[in-house]
Length: 108
Image (cartoon, rainbow, N blue to C red; front, side, top):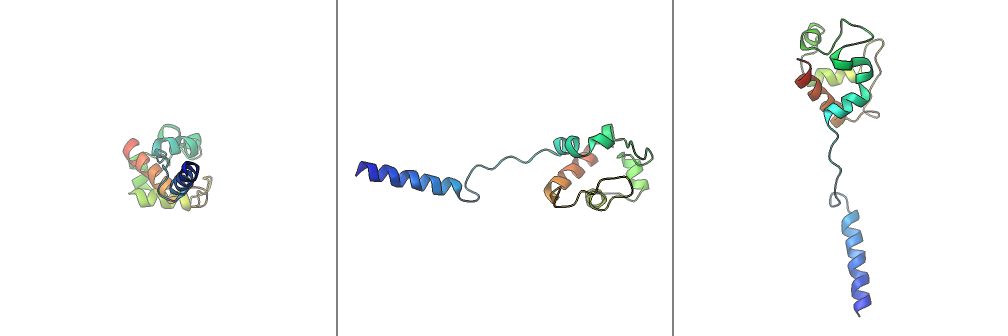
């Protein structure tokens, strides 16, 4: 009887821990880490090695019609010449928004 009880408990624990939303979720990656991974090769310290006039500094962003987080994400999704296209398939919306938040907070 004890063996059956232990087997049932082990099976129950396996089901509970593998159910979506019940297992421990990984914490989201920070905007800074995502920026470092995806953006910093061309935008180190908020600059722009391809087009030095288009930095990530607020004054340059505003001068090019980029005024908020949605505009930054849109630019990631539909970049100009010389910039990698970060589609939602390659960079999920949550990650793109975290990067945009980081840019807004960091490169004033």
